[in-house]
Image (cartoon, rainbow, N blue to C red):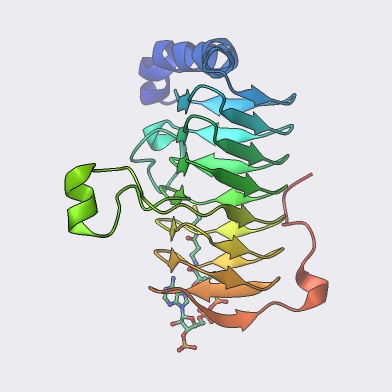
Length: 211
Ligand SMILES: CC(C)(COP(=O)(O)OP(=O)(O)OC[C@H]1O[C@@H](n2cnc3c(N)ncnc32)[C@H](O)[C@@H]1OP(=O)(O)O)[C@@H](O)C(=O)NCCC(=O)NCCS
């Protein structure tokens, strides 16, 4: 056994204890409801406003610990649901250092994988006109629901903006800025994200390695 493994053993034991018991309890106390088999690696930040809903299916995985992912998770998974908003997540989804803000509604299907440090928002946060911002910095900001269908794979460092709709099995390239509607099986990349090719219908099955 390596000496570093021995030295790290107490820390590993604490991390395993908190991942197995403390952080799942923390998630529940935050007002989120996930199905069975939730895996919580490191402490996520979940905020649910009055009348807001944050629900997830079974076997969802939230990774918030820095070195739990070789790409290095630079921030905890941070899901914010505004008053009266909704964030719905399907089953068997995985998130690493993902930030999601649902002021109105963000819907994520089953088996969706979101790469390290990506961001999904359904609002501009501030109104576009300076005069309106002067009256109130956030009132009047535009929002539009985001829909991410089953089997979508979002790469690392991606930003998905308000009103986006990613069809079944879409793949989003690293660093893309997504705005708009993309058809099933589209591989999209760049800023602004554009379709670079379409996956064949047969290859739109379950991602490898998932049950
Ligand atoms: C999106 C991706 C999966 C596409 O892979 P691919 O289908 O093999 O695509 P290719 O490498 O053949 O590239 C196709 C075109 O898209 C462009 N492209 C690919 N990825 C791009 C990206 N992230 N940003 C901008 N353009 C990109 C290529 O330059 C190429 O353009 P061209 O046709 O003008 O030459 C891959 O490029 C990618 O981004 N992988 C990273 C996934 C990731 O983030 N994983 C970490 C998860 S935690």
